[in-house]
Image 1: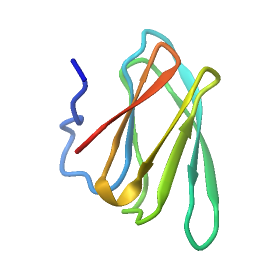
Image 2: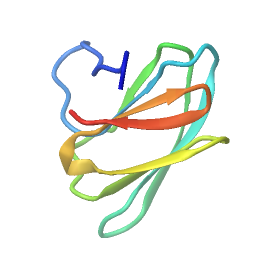
Image 3: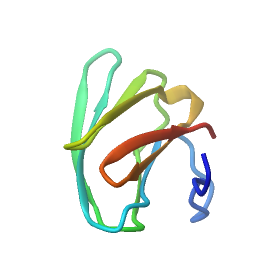
Length: 90
């Protein structure tokens, strides 16, 4: 995926969401596993959000225009671009 790269704020373990779009996006993160955990996150353009811990379960990221799912154990990078959700491998 052209232009997508893991933010370099320091070593990260676990899923990361980055907003590459030009505007603020509100998204919902759903973490599956022993119990389902959800969190709502608002990211301004260029902002990044890392889940608090490593996740060994499927992770979904939803925006108003799309969604993507990836296995959290692979430390996926979810990229929000113009409302769409893309996934890049670590």
